[in-house]
Length: 117
Picture 1 (cartoon, rainbow, N blue to C red):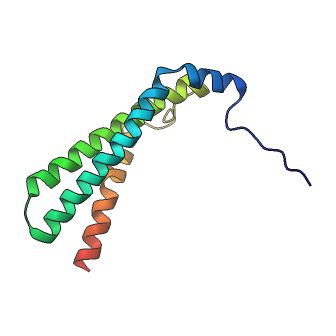
Picture 2: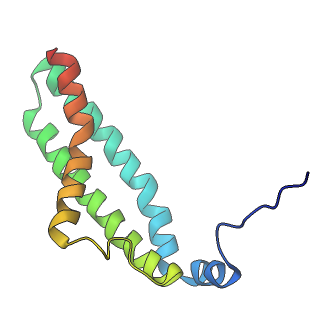
Picture 3: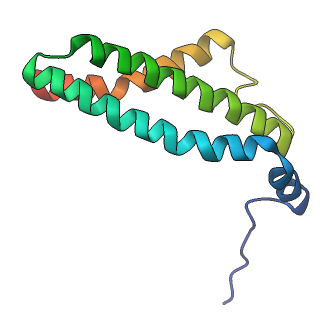
């Protein structure tokens, strides 16, 4: 039995995606955000294991959170252009900030729980 493949985008959405400047912005921000995450992970682990570099570890979490906000906000704008609605439209701005903060803290909370317990 042959299965029908369903495209991720309609032809109109694909055209809007390809023409959007936000597609390029997302393509640049995604690997940069991952690099910032890896640097932050290193700095936090170094602080946890050696006790050195507390300021750098804390600053890296703030910078990582900034990049998380940037990719989420530009991603929402991209979704509005491509799909016709904002990603976080039903959420209040406060809940959106809380979600961003929570997700930026998860790796650090997991590391602390492993090291403490």
